[in-house]
Structures are given as structure tokens and as C-alpha cells.
Amino acid sequence: MNITFLSVNSSFSHTSMAYHILKGYSDPEEEHNWQMVECTINEKVERVLRQLAKTEPDWLLASCYIFSVKELFEILRRYVLIKPDVKVILGGPELLGNNEELLREYPWITLAVRGEGEVPLKRVVAGERYDRIRGLCWIDEEDRYRDNGTADLADMEEVIPHYNKLFDTERPFVQYETSRGCPNRCTFCTSSLDPILRYIPLEEVRFHLQRIQRAGIKEVRILDRTFNSKNSRLVELLTMFREEFPGLRFHCEVDPAFIQESFFEALELAPPGQMHIETGLQTFSEDTYEIVQRIGPMDRTVSGLTRICAMKNVEVHADLIGGLPGCTVESHYEDLMTLFKMEPHEIQLENLKILPGTPLAKRPELVHSPTAPYEVLRTETMSFDDLCAVSNWSKMLDWFYNYLPIQKVFLHCCNSEYEFFSNLYEFLDSEGAFEKPLSAKKRFELLYDYLIKIDDQEHIAMLAAAWYVAGFSPERGLFPATLYREDEFPDDLELLLGTVHDKWHKRFEIQLPKNNLYISYSKGMINSADTAIAVWRSFN
Image (tube, rainbow, N blue to C red; front, side, top):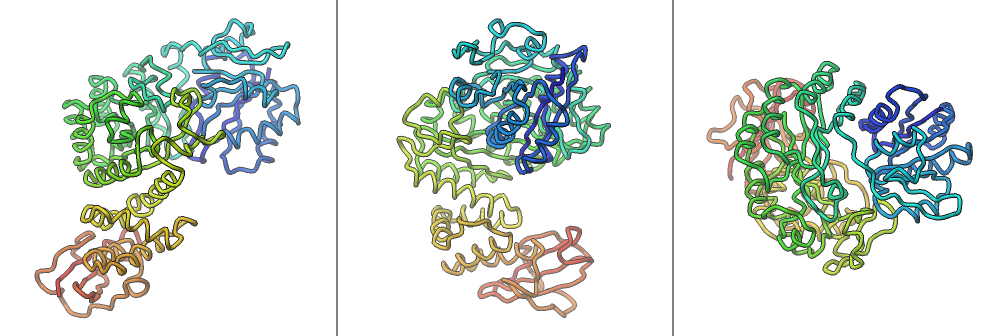
């Protein structure tokens, strides 16, 4: 029998973990012919159809995710016309709810799997009757919807051996899990449906990381829902990362409310840049935490996040969700202002998605799109216009906060004036900025135009410094400077931005209304990443 797994990824960098694990677990004796067809959401359907046709599948398997389900179904709807007798088995987070509507809309789906796929697929491959396998949903021969609940969970000891083939050396990073399950019960998240925590033994983690290291891969993105769910294990992992794998970079998500002192002590010893910590706090509203049943005291969330953000050797990514129950435009604005004070390296703000199967999907007051990505359209406390504003705030964060050349000046602006962010938003909206993507140069130009409008000379000087450090021309553009021909810069200058260097290649000066700026470039091309740039300031 030919079994083909179709993996539709968000980009080439990503690859499926599911294929090798499902193949190894379901067919350990390799009695069947397994193949995988991978593509991205941006590839032409015709190319993918040709690849599928070459594998001649009897069974076609796929995992459905919010980011790719539309493209996946565009492929499947066409392929079943090419080979009507193919059996299509689908799983993944998109199938955690009631699957009857899906199965009736797409009658070519043979089986939908609710929950983890290892156990039910193994039993299907073995030829067992569908009605005896937990987790299967299907339409029977008498046109009745059959639903066998949620799949049984596999023992991790039986899953672990199949990790060995996961690591594709052609990708810039690998995705890896050291545990399954989540201690939180957030009603907006599919992870709340997997309450049983299961861990891969540390020796197995070490073995897998050794394989990754030998393959020359430099980055490991750990998929654990809450990496610090077990503190003693976490400390052992951080020690292992530091002592045995200093050349690897790790991404992981932690809950700041449950960080213990031993975690901070271990994290402080990590090599600079080795750890990229994602913190899914979602909101600072205690009332919303209670509504969505997220555990963890808010005071500990704030103190834990504040302390992580202050660590110089760690990069911190902070997540916020717009449109959660009880939240308002005002509360979301306060969340942003609070985060700006903490200064994480990145801030991600995305509006709530009402995911199938989650408890939040049962709340009628949360009106959302009926198709993926199921974005919320209005709530009891936020109108559609409110949510659109928050969505545009997300763009602002990507343009000005998460774009490192501008981050320092933008952060200084927002922390200097509480209303700066909202006033800048109104200005950008009036300029039609949210209707199209913004180039890096255009971001500088729009922020400059606003600072000119409010006559903020202090931050104009900082923006000029950021312009030069970003590698834009010192002789053309927003801040044209002139060559500095003296032997030395004036005394008592203040370093405004950049990296101090001893040997210079070119030097410039620019006179601003309240500041004189002096720019020096080390030996090399001005726009080269290897060129050190320093901007100094004197006051007129």
C-alpha cells in the first residue's frame, strides 16, 4: 500500500515533524511504502499535484493548521478529482472541534482524527474497524456522522525512537519538542485540551541535540507549550544547553508567572544570545485572566517578565492578544505601555483567533470569521473598528519596535509621552500608511514627518543617528551631512548611538536646530554590516 503525507508549510524554513513520527510509530516494520510531499503555502497548486501524482497514494494523509488549511484544501479538492478512489485522512489542530460539518462539506474526506494521531493511525494501518478506534470521525455508509471522541495518547517511550529522522540539514533551524501537554487551561488555546504532561527523558534529549549539532544545524526551536512547566527539569536542560551545546541557539516559551529563582540563576549563566525566550503573557488584565481561566498570579507574571527583560544575555519576545474577553482598546493600550517600560526585544500583538474545539468557541458573544484564521470580529467590549485599530497597532510594532534600527528612538518616544503611540497612530492613519507595506526607508520618513509636525527636536536627532547606524546614506536622504575635514572631533561629545571604534574611514557632521551630530565610519563600505558606525552629539 502507498501512503503519502502531504505537508503544507508556511515557508521553506519550516518542515513537518509529523511525517517521520507517524510513519515510524504506525508502521515500525515498514510494511508499506511511505512518501512525503512538502510544499509551502505560496507554491503553485499544479506543481504540488504533479508531485502527489508521482507517489500514486492509496492513502493521503495531512495535518490541518490554521495558517495552511486554505491552501491544503485547494490542493486536496483537486487531487481527489484526479484520483477519486484515494482515501484521505486528516488530523491536526483544525479538527479538534465538531467535525460533522467539515465531513459533510467535503465528502471525499475518509477520516478526520481528533487529537494526537499516533495511536489512531497505527490502528487504522493495522486494519482495525473504525468504530473501535478512539479519535476517529467519519460519515458511515448509511450517511450517519460517527464520532469516537478524542484519540488516546501515545506513550512517549514509543514515540521517541522516531525522532531520529526529524532533522533536515537543509533547513536553517529544526523544530523539536522535549515535552507534550500544558499546565495551563487557557480557554482560547488548543493546548488546554492536552492536560497530561509527558516528558522526553533528558538522555534522549541529549542524544537528539548531539545529532542536531553534528548535522551543523545552529538553531533549535522548542515546541513545548510551557518550557518551564517543571522547574527542576528546566534547570537541568539549561545546564545541558550551556555546557554541552554552547554553539546552538534555542527558542523556547516560558510562563513568567511560574519562573523560580533557580531558573534565573541558570539563565544568567547562558552564553549571550544562546536563549531566545518567548513569553505568552497575552494581557496584563487580571479580570481577563480569570475569564479565560489562565492560572498564575498577575503580580508574579509582571515581576517574572520584568526580570527576564532586564537580563542582558537573553532575547525576550513578548506576546499580546487583542480582543480577549473583557479587554478594551484602553486596556490593550495600557498593556503596550507597560511592555514598553520593560523593553523586551520583540513585541507581537495579534488579534484573537477563535480556534475550533476550544471552550472559547462556545461563547456566542465572541463573533468571529467562519473560516480560517477565525479572527474575532467583535466582542462585548470591543467593536470591529476597535479591533481594526489594534490590528494596525500590530503593524506599528513591526515597523518601529521590532525593526531594530528604529527601536531605540521609538521606545524613547513612547516612554517619554504616554499619548505618543496613539497620536502617531492617528497621524499614520491620516497618511494612509496602513493600506500598504512600508519599506525601511519609508518608516524613517513617516516617523520623521510626525516628529517635524510636533517639533520634537530631541527625537529628530535620535532618528538621524538611527538613520546613519542603519546604513542609509550620510550624504543623501532625510539627513544629508557634510564631510568633516578637521583632525579631531570637538571635545566633550555625547555618544548618541552606535559602536565606538578607533580607526575611522570617513567622518561627517550635520547641524540640526538644537544639536550638532558627528558621524564616523570605520574602514569599509558605509552600508556594510562589518562597518562600525558611531554618532556623537553636541548641544548648540
